[in-house]
Image (tube, rainbow, N blue to C red; front, side, top):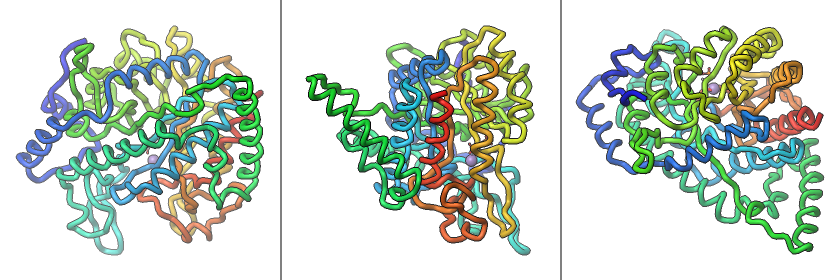
Length: 444
Ligand code: PEP
Ligand code: MN
């Protein structure tokens, strides 16, 4: 592996979707400060996740990756983190029971603060300002002051990620994720919904089985704690580069800002800066594949980022759209598989299904999300390949951002609790409902 490129090398590649900072000295100072701060995750943990993703690639495990489209600094509260974690853990229980294989749990959490945008600017009335690019770059308020690209925010990303990860680690190892308490992960507002009722029945069944196993004298630490990993899109070159460190054990570079880092649909150019940085780090890498992806592009990306064909290194996150996945995915999966590569195939049923409602909200229909999930399973069933996981934008709260689901959320309901600063997320109810739908495909 050639040497880690410098930040300057990366900028020479003309990276897309980057902020425009006014003061280069200030940026350099922030990067210097970041480089001195301790790692957020350890190289050994990244290796452990890579091994688990190798199991996903081999068809022996399933990945559940989920969280906000854009985390916010204001969202770093105990209840917000707890609710999101509970939602993911409940979904994982449903999926594990159905698939009867380990579910690898990864949050879009503790680092998901930078957003690619389709336009550099946003216009409201006769005012045009820089677009919101995530709390890592600027503020959401529609004022000149808030929308300025501020490098100091990168230190805020570190602090927010660190606080989130600290609480997540305490939750998953400190008794909160004990399977004996999974009944209580269901929240009051979900309990009486169809998915909530199913969850109650399922957990009661599992709890009886656990009690039986304990009565037999078989105790397992595995049911008391959970392995949970963090992930985000590696978009800010300053932040991702500063957090990349040489591991003293292996002498290889690891991005210590998260366990799994993915490259977004808009920044996965083969000769681009993001691919260049990620091909040098040893973390497991996600790559988003949208509807324009050809099999050759997927293969070229895999060859560039994973020339050694290391198990668990590459996770392809496909986001083709409900109307396209059945036409476009087969060729990509077939040719990548025929090349001898074993990758994890994961379905992001969110990003190909976004539209604007008549009343002006960016939304997604739950039925489209389910349709893409079903298309994903259909394609893999047909080819005999393993549908390895789900990548979902969700929240643990009762928001109204995506239409449909058992509650039959209508466009007129969107305004009541629309809180996302970027893409619409499934609420807690819709997330659990999705898990049951995926579970049905997994037991077939
Ligand atoms: C995202 O995951 O929020 C995102 C922007 O996705 P994509 O790169 O697939 O558009
Ligand atoms: Mn998104």
